[in-house]
Length: 434
Image (tube, rainbow, N blue to C red; front, side, top):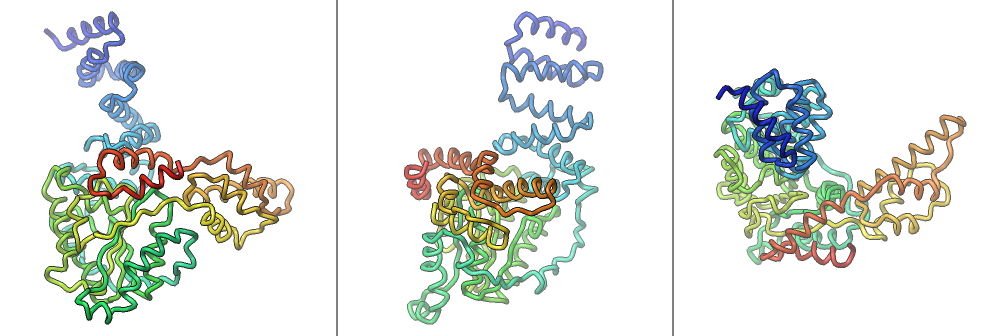
């Protein structure tokens, strides 16, 4: 039977049974290989999604069509939703990276492409290669002293999170301040802690403040500092960072979004990503080097994606939940953020009580919305007016708490995958606050 005849018969069958999504998907799979059906193909996909709105294959194909037609914004919206739900295929991730590239979001395009190649080094793309591929001759000596920071912020600059700061003080700062006492018991100072919780709650700021409290050097490690598209270079980059830290103890190495570097090895398709993880574990263990005086801090919004090997004793064995700020903490954050801005009679406690489940980042967004409103007024009158309680309350109606989705996901893990007790603090928070 000729392919086009088969397509026409499938179209007729679908018209008789429009809700048969399996049949319609067969038709779509056939049509996508023939240019004469290009316009009708998009219509068929949209019809399928009316009956099966969660069909990821159909959504990816729709996004590809949008990309091919130059509708990159539509492509990004569709694929970002799938990526956020962890159901985007490798080909879908490549399309999303290329869409970011067309929109000139080079940082996001590069980051996504590097993550794809970490999982599957054979999943290359010519356009992305031309934009980002680095040569094997790349210098690995770029981690000079300029790579180090000496943070001047301390815990006093971190709004709220008193329980978290107390736990870090007990487990990290006290041993470093009393190194000789700990050494007399054969205890090394340093080690690894993992900060986890919803995004925007101050994990990065907290890591910097920890370094500031102990007057330590600080290295903020991003994916771009580690991942290289050529075999072996990522492991070398990781080793170079640890070497630089060992030369400058006491030193805090901070890995944000550590799940991108420490994902479950069972989820990886190729050996390259596993080699990076094995290198990371070797550096944490300090088998060939002394890690005394080295503090490794990891931050993640998705601790359930971490390889369990990272939570063994001597690695990230101290795991600290960083929750959204409580009312008193939100008052403190509001005061810190509004300190140098024109204000008048702000009822900080009233605002804080109305920001249920707000993260620190949400409070920042709230203040920005209020400021934008005042700027609109000032542009009309030519007179800058101070921010008031009324302005902040009005802004509350324009911004919702960003932590709710995170807690909905975390609750599932806390309920069904908490054999080790890792998510006990999360469940306590959910029962108390949500």
